[in-house]
Length: 164
Image 1 (cartoon, helix red, strand yellow):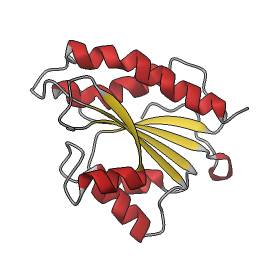
Image 2 (image 1 turned 30 degrees about the horizontal axis):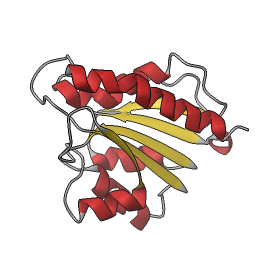
Image 3 (image 1 turned 135 degrees about the vertical axis):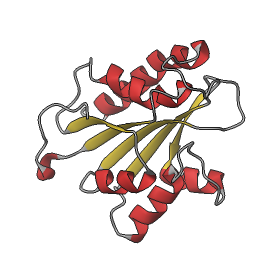
Image 4 (image 1 turned 180 degrees about the vertical axis):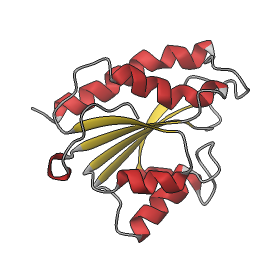
């Protein structure tokens, strides 16, 4: 877990979850972006965490937050390092019943379960990055590593835009 002090439930605004496994190449992208975000000043009510486990854990972590931002490696059939920001409803549509995430229980299934349980936040954004290399290594591929600053800045702009 990367977050600072615990945020009381009534002050929880945005949870940022870096999803992935840093021992599996580009799958560690979400964790790396989360780490980068903790180096910046964030608005009040924002927490950053790492979710290196199954999609079921995502449901538990999302509970009680107004907005959740997930960052994950996503196979979209695009050039490695390409990233897109999706809303929860876009992900379910794009996945079409398939697993969009690289994890056994994917983000799509976690969102469906959260909705069924009445625990889906008001807003869920998913930053998906096309991986290049999924093998046992702690190193990100150059194309995925190069996407981190742009994604980080985009998330920071979104967070601070809401504060105005």
